[in-house]
Image (tube, rainbow, N blue to C red; front, side):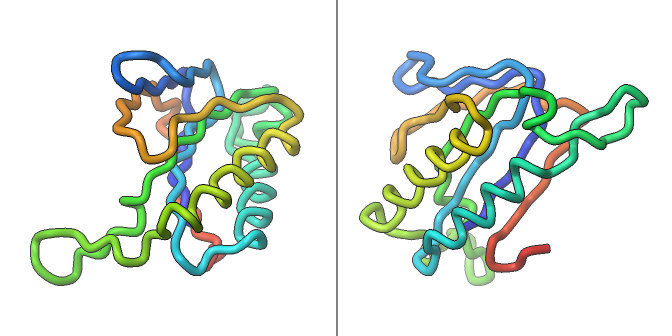
Length: 150
């Protein structure tokens, strides 16, 4: 699994001109699932995200986690995070998981984050054409991959 994690002051996602998910301060998480991903990838990634210290403390140092700030989370599925662009000009998405694999892992990811955060999370609609808006705070943007674990 691969995520692009952005610290935001606000974010929203629309499907067919209707807002389906919206948060104030917290994290916007774009998540891509590949064919080899399993429950262990979800668990590792959720733990990493929830405990990652990327929010400012009283001295302005990034020393607090999303749990400590009681921030919100908005999750968006994005298969294009696994695009391969080595050959030609058209990206290949061959590594992205098919829906029968991706949907259960996406649902587990959302549920696990919600449990660990101790509050509901917001989300887009898997497979839908979505319009995402955000105000990146910092800006702080990180890429985390459960296979690389860097």
